[in-house]
Image (cartoon, rainbow, N blue to C red; front, top):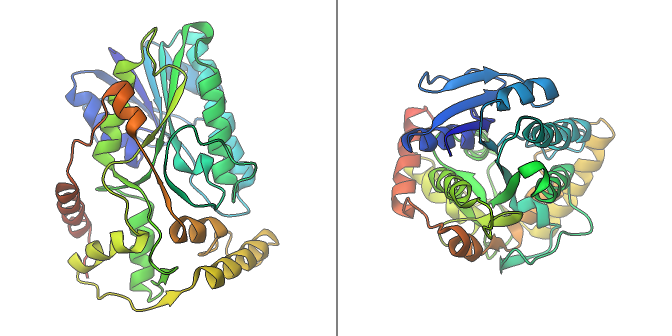
Length: 333
């Protein structure tokens, strides 16, 4: 790699990936809706839905990372999800063909294989489900399939990294939503506490992307492959976050809702939202309930074998760094 483009480089994972690439001494360019705060790298402002803008951003780059995506589990967001996650990704693939990019690394998601059924430590041989619980998982699946199908076309090599639940400094999704629920007195545990979920610290996810890109060469086993990316041992979703909340000064919750009750409420909430009643993004969806109430974690042994992925940040350090950022960002009680 010499000159790399990070699409979505001003996002949560994107910022950490840009920093990691820069520290590797690479020439880095960002393509995003917003201008990043750093001036250490080149920035191009644009929309992934604009095919010409994407193509121009790719000019001169040998490697492209597509980390951009709309994350939305609401039942009224289907068209926007298609436009960004599918059509936008198609623009990226076509741009790579057009300007001669050599490598495309796509940030996928564990959601591409999830239909609500328990998954405990399985690997990439797990097939795609017949049906997803929401449009987000489906659009990520379509985009992943199209990236992998593009491998070997027009000299382009591709791979996809299915990240577990990403957390860490700069989190714009999980921690803000959880802490808002805590402050509003709406935080409660779903299920009986036995289900395990896989997380990955953002710096470890960024490191995995760089390793995959470095290994993505002609004849490599990485070409055309997908990989689950986690780091440390899975744990119950709520048990994972409770120590962070305690460190920020919030008392533990004793409120709990059974899986069956929560899933039923979620189904009703989704139906109402689809009819235009209430918020477009219900607090409870079948996906959010199922993903926290049944086992949902994977093995990253294939990534270890094919491109040497191992977590570069320990669980203890990840916890300390995340807590420090949360305090500095004003999330402490």
